Amino acid sequence: MTWALLAFALSLVATVAVKKIASRWGIMDRPTDPRKVHAKPTPLLGGVAIFLSFAIVVLALLSGSDALTSGEITPTHYLGVLAGGLILMIGGFLDDKYNLPPRLSFIAPVLAALVAIGAGIEVSKLTNPFGGILYLEAWQSNVLVFAWLLVVMFTTKFLDGLDGLATGVSAIASLMIMLLAMTTAYLQPDVALLSSVALGSLLGFLPWNFHPAKIFLGEGGSTFVGYLVGILAVISGGKVATALLVLGIPLLDVVWVILRRLRSGGVAAIAKGDRKHLHHRLLDLGWSQRKIVLAYYVVAASFGFAALFLQSQQKLVALGLLIVFMLVTAAILVRREYATAHRVS
Image (cartoon, rainbow, N blue to C red; front, side, top):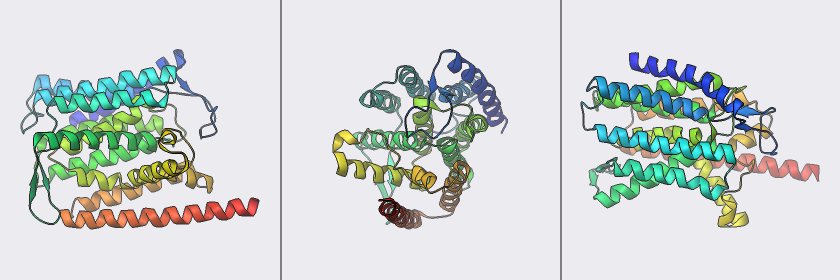
């Protein structure tokens, strides 16, 4: 708890410093695009504060005790994770500063995932929801971890459309992995400690990022919070199902948006932003930012807490229910949008 509080305090203070630096350097998100929902220029680079607080506490722990290495996670793993995070910060800074084209935004996340894998982040086995254990070859683990990290990073990147949304949902995912690691069934004190540090770093940033936001995550931050969740899910021994349930709605929303963009404009349309994400549709229906964000928090926390008590097959059923919920919600929203458009015309 002490280390989590330290990470919280560092993040809280570092955010103020980063906000001043971003403002001085003119690294701002200006509401010139119709997709933007904020009314005035807002500093970016907020993810730097989260990364710095997380990295400082992790390095302090590694240098002063063996609390983070009491299990199967080695210092090499942690250094690889931090190196991947640093890559995201550098890539994010360049993107926020120079507004890079979408195709270049893939470079930093891809490199970060490769660095983490190179440091030994792997999944050696998976629980088969229908019984038994699936053991993975090294190449299978590499492909799975690479795909998983990219999926989670771009899920939180797309989710970062309203104040506090990506940060809060990522904090909930970190909390659930921490609680799961503390149960007698898993009992992973190193994972629980690492998750608590991630949680503290995210929560320290959240007061400045919640509506009305004083600072945004920025490109690096929006991918880093997903990177953190993805790493925690893998490094804890494969708690991917738990992370999936917490991130279920945002992830399904990404799938929905990508399929719609593919259908309307082909592959080139995937990287083109619009206001068709679930949170944008709810905003257009008249929901306030806070109401939407809190609704996401409730759904994420509900399915996350359920994951603490469900077995593998039951988690699969819960994921199925989440998919059905998302499909029904999407159908209702699209139908309302269609009816509104026809009334106007």
